[in-house]
Length: 265
Image (cartoon, rainbow, N blue to C red):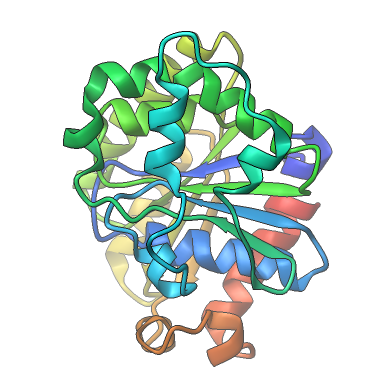
């Protein structure tokens, strides 16, 4: 059996895929809130400039957020941030035991530019390492891209969970993601573990699904499936997590299995 992230002490985790529409935000929100409901202290980082997580958890605008943090870290000769300064970027208790580092700048990439984002990379990783001493888990959402911002986020983590769909184009997409993780690992100077594939919107009973299961098993990364559920989009539309909307449904059962086996052990 593959050791869990807790057993491996890999508690800074990015949820990433360069393809859109595969359920990254749903997955990271559900995993983070699920860990919090299990008594874990969780920091959720909204690394997608669209800010969907920040909207879901009601983070107020007009306050310090990810863009401002990266701007500060990118300055020449930037000193290490004090605990109080770092705390000013975090919205506390968006849910019980769940804090959020929000983002509100949709044009974050163009406003900062790749050069400044790259300069902030090491400082951002150091910030997460310091915060890891105060949280049981730090989970990062990413956008469907592979630019400087996404490399900054993945390079700061210790492991990656990859949401996907059962389709033929996902094979080449997974190969690209794994290459990107390997590059981020080289940039960070330490191993970053591709820890799990999460196939969202899974539908049993389709002949092609078993073919895809065998195909993706060749990558030697643990595979989890989350059944397709109408409750997931409905919950998000109402600003609620899956655990609040349908805690006894099949999708909640599947995400619970990921938490129990892949995260907590």
